[in-house]
Image (cartoon, rainbow, N blue to C red; front, side, top):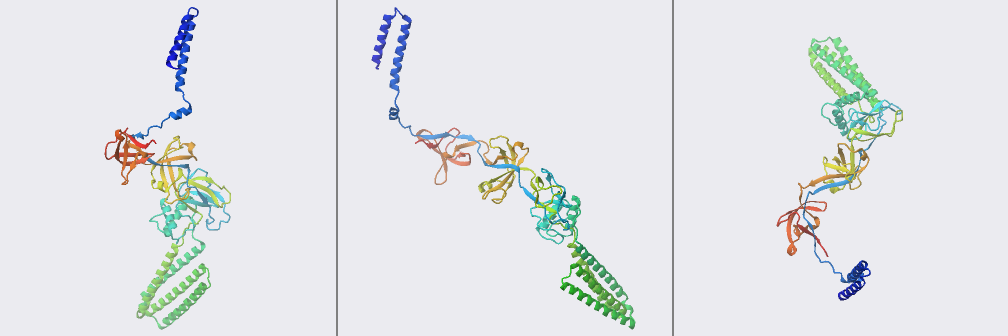
Length: 521
Protein backbone atom coordinates (compact mmCIF):
# COMPACT_ATOMS: atom_id res chain seq x y z
CA UNK A 1 0.00 0.00 0.00
CA UNK A 2 1.50 3.35 -1.05
CA UNK A 3 1.48 6.52 1.02
CA UNK A 4 -1.16 8.13 -1.26
CA UNK A 5 -3.48 5.17 -0.88
CA UNK A 6 -2.97 5.24 2.88
CA UNK A 7 -3.89 8.93 3.03
CA UNK A 8 -7.01 8.23 0.90
CA UNK A 9 -8.12 5.48 3.23
CA UNK A 10 -7.61 7.76 6.19
CA UNK A 11 -9.80 10.46 4.53
CA UNK A 12 -12.65 8.10 3.74
CA UNK A 13 -12.64 6.67 7.23
CA UNK A 14 -12.65 10.12 8.70
CA UNK A 15 -15.61 11.21 6.53
CA UNK A 16 -17.62 8.19 7.55
CA UNK A 17 -16.79 8.89 11.12
CA UNK A 18 -18.07 12.41 10.87
CA UNK A 19 -21.32 11.22 9.27
CA UNK A 20 -21.92 8.65 11.95
CA UNK A 21 -20.78 10.78 14.92
CA UNK A 22 -24.28 11.85 16.03
CA UNK A 23 -25.23 8.27 16.77
CA UNK A 24 -22.04 6.79 18.50
CA UNK A 25 -19.44 9.49 18.93
CA UNK A 26 -16.90 7.72 21.34
CA UNK A 27 -16.81 4.21 19.87
CA UNK A 28 -16.47 5.37 16.29
CA UNK A 29 -13.39 7.50 17.00
CA UNK A 30 -11.64 4.66 18.71
CA UNK A 31 -12.45 2.28 15.89
CA UNK A 32 -11.04 4.65 13.31
CA UNK A 33 -7.75 5.09 15.18
CA UNK A 34 -7.18 1.36 15.60
CA UNK A 35 -7.91 0.65 11.98
CA UNK A 36 -5.50 3.28 10.75
CA UNK A 37 -2.71 2.08 13.05
CA UNK A 38 -3.13 -1.56 12.02
CA UNK A 39 -2.97 -0.67 8.37
CA UNK A 40 0.22 1.33 8.85
CA UNK A 41 1.97 -1.42 10.82
CA UNK A 42 1.05 -4.03 8.26
CA UNK A 43 2.44 -1.91 5.46
CA UNK A 44 5.78 -1.35 7.25
CA UNK A 45 6.18 -5.03 8.22
CA UNK A 46 5.54 -6.07 4.67
CA UNK A 47 8.47 -3.94 3.57
CA UNK A 48 10.86 -5.12 6.40
CA UNK A 49 10.37 -8.90 6.54
CA UNK A 50 12.52 -11.00 4.18
CA UNK A 51 12.57 -14.68 3.43
CA UNK A 52 15.80 -16.68 4.19
CA UNK A 53 16.60 -16.69 0.49
CA UNK A 54 16.22 -12.88 0.29
CA UNK A 55 18.37 -12.45 3.43
CA UNK A 56 21.16 -14.59 1.97
CA UNK A 57 21.02 -12.65 -1.29
CA UNK A 58 21.41 -9.30 0.48
CA UNK A 59 24.06 -10.49 3.07
CA UNK A 60 27.62 -9.08 2.74
CA UNK A 61 30.88 -10.48 4.31
CA UNK A 62 32.29 -8.58 7.32
CA UNK A 63 35.16 -6.26 6.72
CA UNK A 64 38.61 -7.86 7.21
CA UNK A 65 40.70 -6.56 10.17
CA UNK A 66 43.22 -7.32 12.92
CA UNK A 67 42.34 -9.13 16.15
CA UNK A 68 43.83 -7.17 19.04
CA UNK A 69 44.10 -7.49 22.80
CA UNK A 70 45.31 -4.91 25.30
CA UNK A 71 48.74 -5.02 26.91
CA UNK A 72 48.32 -5.96 30.59
CA UNK A 73 50.25 -5.54 33.80
CA UNK A 74 50.33 -8.84 35.69
CA UNK A 75 52.56 -11.11 37.78
CA UNK A 76 53.92 -14.04 35.75
CA UNK A 77 55.00 -17.14 37.64
CA UNK A 78 56.08 -20.62 36.53
CA UNK A 79 55.35 -23.74 38.55
CA UNK A 80 55.63 -27.52 38.38
CA UNK A 81 52.12 -28.88 38.89
CA UNK A 82 51.48 -32.61 39.39
CA UNK A 83 49.21 -34.82 41.45
CA UNK A 84 50.24 -37.25 44.15
CA UNK A 85 49.02 -39.46 46.97
CA UNK A 86 49.19 -38.20 50.56
CA UNK A 87 50.20 -40.93 52.99
CA UNK A 88 53.04 -42.63 54.82
CA UNK A 89 55.65 -43.34 52.15
CA UNK A 90 58.63 -45.69 51.80
CA UNK A 91 57.02 -48.94 52.97
CA UNK A 92 59.57 -51.56 54.01
CA UNK A 93 58.98 -55.11 55.16
CA UNK A 94 60.80 -56.34 58.27
CA UNK A 95 61.63 -60.04 58.24
CA UNK A 96 63.15 -62.31 60.89
CA UNK A 97 66.38 -64.13 60.06
CA UNK A 98 67.13 -67.54 61.57
CA UNK A 99 70.63 -66.51 62.75
CA UNK A 100 69.84 -65.53 66.34
CA UNK A 101 71.76 -66.01 69.57
CA UNK A 102 74.36 -68.77 69.59
CA UNK A 103 72.55 -70.71 66.86
CA UNK A 104 71.05 -73.25 69.26
CA UNK A 105 67.65 -71.64 69.90
CA UNK A 106 65.64 -74.26 68.01
CA UNK A 107 62.19 -73.16 66.85
CA UNK A 108 61.92 -69.38 66.54
CA UNK A 109 58.87 -67.99 68.34
CA UNK A 110 57.77 -64.41 69.06
CA UNK A 111 58.27 -63.99 72.80
CA UNK A 112 57.74 -60.27 73.36
CA UNK A 113 58.20 -56.61 72.40
CA UNK A 114 55.44 -56.75 69.76
CA UNK A 115 54.72 -53.11 68.74
CA UNK A 116 51.30 -51.63 68.00
CA UNK A 117 50.50 -50.19 64.55
CA UNK A 118 51.11 -46.47 64.48
CA UNK A 119 53.96 -46.35 67.01
CA UNK A 120 57.33 -44.89 66.04
CA UNK A 121 60.55 -46.93 66.25
CA UNK A 122 63.90 -45.14 66.39
CA UNK A 123 67.54 -46.20 66.14
CA UNK A 124 68.51 -48.59 68.92
CA UNK A 125 64.92 -49.67 69.60
CA UNK A 126 63.98 -53.34 69.77
CA UNK A 127 61.43 -54.00 67.03
CA UNK A 128 60.61 -57.54 68.21
CA UNK A 129 61.79 -60.25 70.59
CA UNK A 130 62.20 -63.72 69.09
CA UNK A 131 63.00 -66.71 71.31
CA UNK A 132 64.35 -64.35 73.94
CA UNK A 133 66.68 -62.51 71.53
CA UNK A 134 66.23 -58.95 70.25
CA UNK A 135 65.83 -57.58 66.73
CA UNK A 136 67.49 -54.17 67.09
CA UNK A 137 66.88 -51.40 64.55
CA UNK A 138 69.87 -49.40 63.30
CA UNK A 139 69.96 -46.73 60.61
CA UNK A 140 71.70 -47.82 57.42
CA UNK A 141 71.24 -48.61 53.74
CA UNK A 142 73.27 -51.85 53.57
CA UNK A 143 71.14 -54.83 54.65
CA UNK A 144 72.41 -57.16 57.38
CA UNK A 145 73.40 -59.88 54.91
CA UNK A 146 75.94 -61.63 57.18
CA UNK A 147 76.95 -61.97 60.82
CA UNK A 148 79.54 -59.43 61.96
CA UNK A 149 82.28 -60.54 64.33
CA UNK A 150 85.83 -59.59 65.35
CA UNK A 151 87.99 -59.76 62.25
CA UNK A 152 85.18 -58.88 59.81
CA UNK A 153 86.00 -56.12 57.33
CA UNK A 154 83.93 -54.13 54.86
CA UNK A 155 81.57 -51.17 54.46
CA UNK A 156 78.89 -52.90 56.53
CA UNK A 157 81.31 -52.85 59.49
CA UNK A 158 81.78 -49.10 59.03
CA UNK A 159 77.98 -48.73 58.88
CA UNK A 160 77.68 -50.62 62.19
CA UNK A 161 80.36 -48.49 63.86
CA UNK A 162 78.69 -45.28 62.67
CA UNK A 163 75.39 -46.41 64.15
CA UNK A 164 77.12 -47.30 67.43
CA UNK A 165 78.80 -43.87 67.43
CA UNK A 166 75.46 -42.06 66.93
CA UNK A 167 74.09 -43.92 69.95
CA UNK A 168 77.17 -43.06 72.03
CA UNK A 169 78.47 -46.65 72.15
CA UNK A 170 81.61 -46.28 70.01
CA UNK A 171 84.76 -44.22 70.51
CA UNK A 172 87.19 -43.16 67.82
CA UNK A 173 86.73 -42.91 64.07
CA UNK A 174 84.61 -45.61 62.38
CA UNK A 175 86.52 -47.79 59.92
CA UNK A 176 86.03 -51.00 57.96
CA UNK A 177 87.50 -53.37 60.60
CA UNK A 178 85.59 -55.09 63.42
CA UNK A 179 88.06 -54.96 66.30
CA UNK A 180 88.07 -54.74 70.10
CA UNK A 181 86.53 -51.25 69.98
CA UNK A 182 83.67 -52.57 67.89
CA UNK A 183 83.09 -55.48 70.27
CA UNK A 184 83.00 -53.07 73.21
CA UNK A 185 80.46 -50.91 71.36
CA UNK A 186 78.31 -53.96 70.62
CA UNK A 187 78.41 -54.88 74.31
CA UNK A 188 77.12 -51.41 75.21
CA UNK A 189 74.41 -51.58 72.52
CA UNK A 190 73.05 -54.85 73.90
CA UNK A 191 73.19 -53.66 77.51
CA UNK A 192 71.25 -50.51 76.55
CA UNK A 193 68.62 -52.70 74.86
CA UNK A 194 68.40 -54.96 77.92
CA UNK A 195 69.93 -58.14 76.47
CA UNK A 196 73.26 -59.97 76.92
CA UNK A 197 75.55 -59.83 73.88
CA UNK A 198 76.54 -62.94 71.96
CA UNK A 199 80.10 -63.67 73.12
CA UNK A 200 82.90 -65.95 71.85
CA UNK A 201 82.20 -69.61 71.08
CA UNK A 202 83.51 -72.43 73.30
CA UNK A 203 86.18 -73.25 70.73
CA UNK A 204 87.34 -69.63 70.68
CA UNK A 205 87.56 -69.65 74.47
CA UNK A 206 89.77 -72.78 74.33
CA UNK A 207 92.04 -71.12 71.80
CA UNK A 208 92.35 -68.07 74.04
CA UNK A 209 93.21 -70.22 77.06
CA UNK A 210 95.94 -72.05 75.13
CA UNK A 211 97.39 -68.76 73.89
CA UNK A 212 97.50 -67.38 77.43
CA UNK A 213 99.32 -70.52 78.62
CA UNK A 214 101.94 -70.11 75.89
CA UNK A 215 102.54 -66.53 76.96
CA UNK A 216 102.93 -67.55 80.61
CA UNK A 217 105.41 -70.31 79.73
CA UNK A 218 107.44 -67.97 77.53
CA UNK A 219 107.61 -65.36 80.27
CA UNK A 220 108.82 -68.01 82.76
CA UNK A 221 111.50 -69.11 80.28
CA UNK A 222 112.79 -65.55 80.03
CA UNK A 223 113.06 -65.29 83.80
CA UNK A 224 114.94 -68.62 84.01
CA UNK A 225 117.32 -67.72 81.18
CA UNK A 226 118.18 -64.43 82.81
CA UNK A 227 118.83 -66.14 86.15
CA UNK A 228 121.09 -68.65 84.40
CA UNK A 229 123.00 -65.82 82.79
CA UNK A 230 123.70 -64.30 86.18
CA UNK A 231 125.25 -67.52 87.52
CA UNK A 232 126.92 -68.67 84.33
CA UNK A 233 130.25 -67.23 85.29
CA UNK A 234 130.73 -69.37 88.47
CA UNK A 235 131.99 -72.52 86.66
CA UNK A 236 130.57 -76.12 86.96
CA UNK A 237 132.04 -79.51 87.88
CA UNK A 238 132.56 -82.23 85.24
CA UNK A 239 129.72 -84.36 86.62
CA UNK A 240 127.31 -81.43 86.68
CA UNK A 241 128.19 -80.59 83.08
CA UNK A 242 127.60 -84.22 82.01
CA UNK A 243 124.15 -84.34 83.65
CA UNK A 244 123.20 -80.95 82.22
CA UNK A 245 124.20 -81.98 78.71
CA UNK A 246 122.12 -85.16 79.05
CA UNK A 247 119.10 -83.09 80.04
CA UNK A 248 119.56 -80.89 76.98
CA UNK A 249 119.67 -83.94 74.70
CA UNK A 250 116.54 -85.37 76.32
CA UNK A 251 114.71 -82.03 75.98
CA UNK A 252 115.70 -81.81 72.31
CA UNK A 253 114.25 -85.29 71.74
CA UNK A 254 111.00 -84.24 73.47
CA UNK A 255 110.71 -81.18 71.22
CA UNK A 256 111.15 -83.32 68.12
CA UNK A 257 108.52 -85.83 69.31
CA UNK A 258 105.97 -83.12 70.22
CA UNK A 259 106.54 -81.40 66.88
CA UNK A 260 105.99 -84.63 64.93
CA UNK A 261 102.74 -85.30 66.79
CA UNK A 262 101.47 -81.78 66.15
CA UNK A 263 102.39 -81.89 62.46
CA UNK A 264 100.65 -85.25 62.06
CA UNK A 265 97.48 -83.85 63.65
CA UNK A 266 97.51 -80.92 61.24
CA UNK A 267 97.96 -83.27 58.29
CA UNK A 268 95.01 -85.38 59.46
CA UNK A 269 92.74 -82.29 59.79
CA UNK A 270 92.35 -82.43 63.56
CA UNK A 271 89.99 -79.89 65.21
CA UNK A 272 91.47 -76.47 66.04
CA UNK A 273 91.15 -77.17 69.75
CA UNK A 274 93.30 -80.34 69.40
CA UNK A 275 95.88 -78.51 67.34
CA UNK A 276 95.92 -75.73 69.92
CA UNK A 277 96.60 -78.26 72.69
CA UNK A 278 99.45 -79.87 70.71
CA UNK A 279 100.88 -76.41 69.97
CA UNK A 280 100.94 -75.81 73.69
CA UNK A 281 102.78 -79.15 74.24
CA UNK A 282 105.36 -78.23 71.61
CA UNK A 283 105.83 -74.89 73.26
CA UNK A 284 106.20 -76.52 76.68
CA UNK A 285 108.84 -78.92 75.30
CA UNK A 286 110.71 -75.98 73.83
CA UNK A 287 110.54 -74.16 77.14
CA UNK A 288 111.95 -77.27 78.88
CA UNK A 289 114.73 -77.34 76.31
CA UNK A 290 115.47 -73.69 76.93
CA UNK A 291 115.58 -74.36 80.66
CA UNK A 292 117.95 -77.31 80.16
CA UNK A 293 120.18 -75.20 77.98
CA UNK A 294 120.03 -72.41 80.51
CA UNK A 295 121.07 -74.85 83.26
CA UNK A 296 123.94 -76.06 81.10
CA UNK A 297 124.97 -72.49 80.43
CA UNK A 298 124.82 -71.75 84.13
CA UNK A 299 127.08 -74.70 84.89
CA UNK A 300 129.48 -73.72 82.15
CA UNK A 301 130.30 -70.66 84.19
CA UNK A 302 131.97 -67.57 82.95
CA UNK A 303 133.77 -69.53 80.24
CA UNK A 304 130.34 -70.30 78.62
CA UNK A 305 128.57 -66.96 79.33
CA UNK A 306 127.97 -66.39 75.62
CA UNK A 307 125.68 -69.41 75.41
CA UNK A 308 123.63 -68.10 78.36
CA UNK A 309 123.24 -64.74 76.66
CA UNK A 310 122.04 -66.47 73.48
CA UNK A 311 119.53 -68.45 75.54
CA UNK A 312 118.16 -65.23 77.03
CA UNK A 313 117.79 -63.69 73.57
CA UNK A 314 115.98 -66.77 72.28
CA UNK A 315 113.65 -66.81 75.29
CA UNK A 316 112.78 -63.13 74.82
CA UNK A 317 112.08 -63.71 71.13
CA UNK A 318 109.71 -66.58 71.95
CA UNK A 319 107.99 -64.44 74.57
CA UNK A 320 107.36 -61.68 72.01
CA UNK A 321 105.98 -64.19 69.52
CA UNK A 322 103.60 -65.67 72.10
CA UNK A 323 102.35 -62.25 73.15
CA UNK A 324 101.80 -61.22 69.50
CA UNK A 325 99.84 -64.39 68.81
CA UNK A 326 97.62 -63.73 71.83
CA UNK A 327 96.97 -60.15 70.68
CA UNK A 328 96.00 -61.31 67.20
CA UNK A 329 93.72 -63.98 68.58
CA UNK A 330 92.02 -61.51 70.89
CA UNK A 331 91.30 -59.28 67.87
CA UNK A 332 89.25 -62.12 66.35
CA UNK A 333 87.46 -63.18 69.52
CA UNK A 334 84.79 -61.07 71.22
CA UNK A 335 81.13 -60.11 71.13
CA UNK A 336 79.60 -60.57 67.70
CA UNK A 337 76.36 -59.57 65.97
CA UNK A 338 74.27 -62.47 64.58
CA UNK A 339 72.69 -61.75 61.22
CA UNK A 340 69.14 -61.77 62.61
CA UNK A 341 69.66 -59.59 65.69
CA UNK A 342 70.20 -56.27 63.87
CA UNK A 343 68.05 -54.85 61.08
CA UNK A 344 69.50 -51.94 59.15
CA UNK A 345 66.68 -49.66 57.96
CA UNK A 346 67.26 -46.35 56.13
CA UNK A 347 65.86 -43.08 57.44
CA UNK A 348 64.89 -43.91 61.01
CA UNK A 349 62.66 -43.24 62.90
CA UNK A 350 60.00 -45.34 61.21
CA UNK A 351 56.29 -45.81 61.80
CA UNK A 352 54.85 -49.28 62.32
CA UNK A 353 52.23 -49.51 59.59
CA UNK A 354 51.12 -53.13 59.92
CA UNK A 355 52.00 -55.97 62.34
CA UNK A 356 51.77 -59.43 60.80
CA UNK A 357 52.68 -61.53 63.85
CA UNK A 358 51.62 -61.97 67.47
CA UNK A 359 52.96 -63.20 70.79
CA UNK A 360 53.55 -66.96 70.68
CA UNK A 361 53.38 -67.20 66.92
CA UNK A 362 56.22 -68.78 64.97
CA UNK A 363 58.53 -66.10 63.60
CA UNK A 364 59.07 -66.57 59.89
CA UNK A 365 58.79 -64.35 56.86
CA UNK A 366 57.56 -60.77 57.16
CA UNK A 367 56.59 -59.83 60.71
CA UNK A 368 55.74 -56.14 60.19
CA UNK A 369 55.71 -53.31 57.68
CA UNK A 370 57.45 -50.03 58.42
CA UNK A 371 56.83 -46.71 56.70
CA UNK A 372 58.21 -43.20 56.95
CA UNK A 373 57.27 -41.66 60.29
CA UNK A 374 55.85 -38.48 58.71
CA UNK A 375 53.11 -37.97 56.15
CA UNK A 376 54.39 -37.29 52.65
CA UNK A 377 52.95 -36.79 49.20
CA UNK A 378 54.48 -39.14 46.64
CA UNK A 379 54.40 -38.29 42.95
CA UNK A 380 56.47 -38.51 39.77
CA UNK A 381 57.71 -35.92 37.28
CA UNK A 382 59.32 -35.90 33.86
CA UNK A 383 63.04 -35.48 33.35
CA UNK A 384 62.54 -31.84 32.33
CA UNK A 385 60.51 -31.10 35.46
CA UNK A 386 62.99 -32.98 37.63
CA UNK A 387 65.70 -30.55 36.52
CA UNK A 388 63.66 -27.70 38.03
CA UNK A 389 63.22 -29.30 41.46
CA UNK A 390 65.58 -29.38 44.43
CA UNK A 391 65.17 -30.63 47.98
CA UNK A 392 63.92 -27.83 50.25
CA UNK A 393 61.73 -26.02 47.72
CA UNK A 394 58.39 -24.85 49.06
CA UNK A 395 55.16 -26.28 47.67
CA UNK A 396 51.44 -25.68 47.91
CA UNK A 397 49.06 -28.64 48.10
CA UNK A 398 45.28 -28.92 47.81
CA UNK A 399 42.55 -31.17 46.44
CA UNK A 400 42.64 -29.42 43.09
CA UNK A 401 39.90 -26.86 43.58
CA UNK A 402 41.64 -24.72 46.19
CA UNK A 403 39.91 -26.56 49.05
CA UNK A 404 41.91 -27.68 52.11
CA UNK A 405 45.12 -25.94 51.05
CA UNK A 406 48.29 -26.62 53.04
CA UNK A 407 52.02 -26.05 52.63
CA UNK A 408 54.92 -28.43 52.15
CA UNK A 409 58.48 -28.71 50.98
CA UNK A 410 60.28 -31.00 48.56
CA UNK A 411 61.94 -33.72 50.67
CA UNK A 412 63.17 -36.11 47.96
CA UNK A 413 64.01 -35.94 44.25
CA UNK A 414 65.12 -39.23 42.70
CA UNK A 415 68.46 -39.32 40.88
CA UNK A 416 67.37 -42.09 38.52
CA UNK A 417 64.10 -42.72 36.65
CA UNK A 418 61.85 -45.62 37.50
CA UNK A 419 62.76 -45.80 41.21
CA UNK A 420 60.27 -46.07 44.04
CA UNK A 421 56.72 -45.82 42.74
CA UNK A 422 57.66 -43.93 39.55
CA UNK A 423 57.06 -45.51 36.16
CA UNK A 424 59.74 -45.90 33.50
CA UNK A 425 61.12 -42.53 32.43
CA UNK A 426 59.60 -40.76 35.46
CA UNK A 427 61.39 -39.52 38.56
CA UNK A 428 59.90 -40.04 42.01
CA UNK A 429 59.49 -36.96 44.20
CA UNK A 430 58.19 -36.62 47.74
CA UNK A 431 56.70 -33.56 49.40
CA UNK A 432 56.71 -33.33 53.20
CA UNK A 433 53.80 -31.29 54.60
CA UNK A 434 54.71 -28.34 56.82
CA UNK A 435 52.39 -27.90 59.76
CA UNK A 436 49.00 -29.51 60.22
CA UNK A 437 47.42 -31.52 57.42
CA UNK A 438 43.62 -31.68 57.12
CA UNK A 439 42.57 -35.10 58.38
CA UNK A 440 40.17 -35.61 55.49
CA UNK A 441 43.09 -35.60 53.03
CA UNK A 442 44.92 -38.62 54.47
CA UNK A 443 45.16 -41.23 51.74
CA UNK A 444 43.75 -38.82 49.14
CA UNK A 445 45.02 -37.72 45.76
CA UNK A 446 46.09 -34.07 46.00
CA UNK A 447 47.46 -31.43 43.66
CA UNK A 448 51.06 -30.29 44.12
CA UNK A 449 52.26 -26.91 42.91
CA UNK A 450 55.94 -26.06 43.29
CA UNK A 451 56.69 -22.43 42.33
CA UNK A 452 59.84 -22.25 40.21
CA UNK A 453 60.26 -18.57 39.29
CA UNK A 454 58.24 -15.35 39.28
CA UNK A 455 58.50 -11.78 38.10
CA UNK A 456 59.25 -9.15 40.71
CA UNK A 457 55.73 -7.78 40.90
CA UNK A 458 53.41 -6.88 38.02
CA UNK A 459 55.06 -6.43 34.62
CA UNK A 460 53.94 -5.62 31.09
CA UNK A 461 52.62 -8.83 29.56
CA UNK A 462 51.18 -9.85 26.21
CA UNK A 463 49.74 -13.13 24.92
CA UNK A 464 52.30 -15.43 23.33
CA UNK A 465 50.36 -15.06 20.06
CA UNK A 466 51.32 -11.37 19.96
CA UNK A 467 55.05 -12.13 19.72
CA UNK A 468 56.69 -12.24 16.31
CA UNK A 469 60.29 -13.42 15.90
CA UNK A 470 62.42 -12.64 12.87
CA UNK A 471 65.21 -14.74 11.37
CA UNK A 472 67.79 -13.27 13.77
CA UNK A 473 65.73 -14.27 16.78
CA UNK A 474 64.68 -10.71 17.67
CA UNK A 475 61.13 -10.37 18.96
CA UNK A 476 58.57 -7.64 18.34
CA UNK A 477 54.89 -6.89 18.81
CA UNK A 478 52.53 -5.08 16.44
CA UNK A 479 50.70 -2.20 18.14
CA UNK A 480 47.41 -1.36 16.43
CA UNK A 481 46.89 2.23 15.35
CA UNK A 482 46.34 4.62 12.45
CA UNK A 483 47.94 3.80 9.14
CA UNK A 484 48.23 0.08 9.95
CA UNK A 485 49.94 0.40 13.35
CA UNK A 486 53.61 0.11 14.31
CA UNK A 487 56.13 -2.58 15.27
CA UNK A 488 57.75 -2.33 18.70
CA UNK A 489 60.93 -4.40 19.34
CA UNK A 490 60.78 -6.13 22.71
CA UNK A 491 62.85 -8.30 25.02
CA UNK A 492 60.91 -11.34 26.21
CA UNK A 493 61.17 -12.35 29.86
CA UNK A 494 59.37 -15.02 31.87
CA UNK A 495 56.43 -16.76 30.21
CA UNK A 496 53.66 -18.84 31.75
CA UNK A 497 49.99 -19.52 31.29
CA UNK A 498 49.95 -18.25 27.70
CA UNK A 499 51.45 -14.84 28.58
CA UNK A 500 54.99 -13.49 28.35
CA UNK A 501 56.74 -10.62 30.07
CA UNK A 502 57.92 -7.99 27.55
CA UNK A 503 60.14 -4.91 27.77
CA UNK A 504 60.21 -2.46 24.86
CA UNK A 505 63.71 -1.98 23.44
CA UNK A 506 62.67 0.48 20.76
CA UNK A 507 59.54 2.58 20.65
CA UNK A 508 56.87 2.91 23.29
CA UNK A 509 54.73 0.18 24.80
CA UNK A 510 52.31 0.82 27.64
CA UNK A 511 49.52 -0.89 29.50
CA UNK A 512 46.32 -0.76 27.48
CA UNK A 513 48.01 -0.56 24.08
CA UNK A 514 46.28 -2.88 21.62
CA UNK A 515 48.63 -5.50 20.18
CA UNK A 516 47.80 -7.72 17.22
CA UNK A 517 47.35 -11.43 17.96
CA UNK A 518 45.73 -12.45 14.64
CA UNK A 519 43.55 -11.34 11.74
CA UNK A 520 39.95 -11.85 10.68
CA UNK A 521 39.65 -13.59 7.33
